[in-house]
Length: 360
Image (tube, rainbow, N blue to C red; front, side):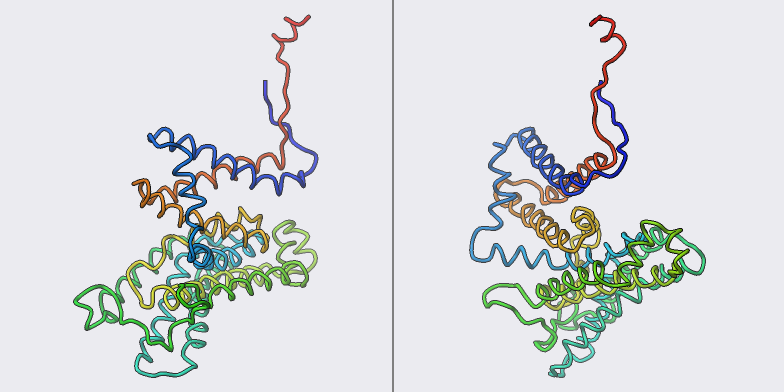
């Protein structure tokens, strides 16, 4: 008989082995899935994990996809470390894109170098403003930020749809629900000619480094960690719970809004009804796969970005639906949660009474 027995303390090795086990289980079940669907298992698996990285634009496309995932996950991880459960980053991402896009459209005919920095600021402020709603409700009425932030995602989507179908619709766009293309001054510069990789990637790396410094070597980071790990001790030490809630939600919302600005300014070049394939929700998986650590999130973001590219590749090469990428993301999260059990429990083999009698 197999039984889970509680450990005396969390197993440090399993903290880092758990994502590896989850990834290995995801690949194994992916092979089984492809075989059930009637494909030679190794062929679609190669197309999913390897082929998107081949060619001159493979790596740059990976970095482009990873940029919003890393930025959003960095912000979410700070809140999760403090037990502040912001799962509405998708909405904050959308409103950040709306704020930045609105500024670009307001100065459509003006070529100024100040426009792009202004869009960055507006994108951050838009995400922070949307995150301020659950922050206020949590600190004022003790309302669950998990529910309010999630519900606001759908409100943000409706705001975007109203604008692109209504007052911001391109008058020369043949009635398509989209805004004007942004002016060159409102477009993020490309890092390498011939690729789509833009200034957003260095901003993501800066966010990773800044989060590593803040969480590991600052008083604010210490307060966030203690508030999540030992709330009673945090209150006894005089740490303000309200301050931690506001701070983490503002950081999470700001980085999500910045990601939205980067997407519409660097990748799409205008506001359209769908500006995200689900980055805000996928970033939750990235945060936990990276163990809420900035460096881990960097690598987890690259892995999850590969799942988006892999989903597109198997659609082209094998005729599978693009949603295969989402399926792999779901399996990865499922196996990660399952393998995390091994941090607090160990598997032991227990001899049953019948076996003991038979042996005697």
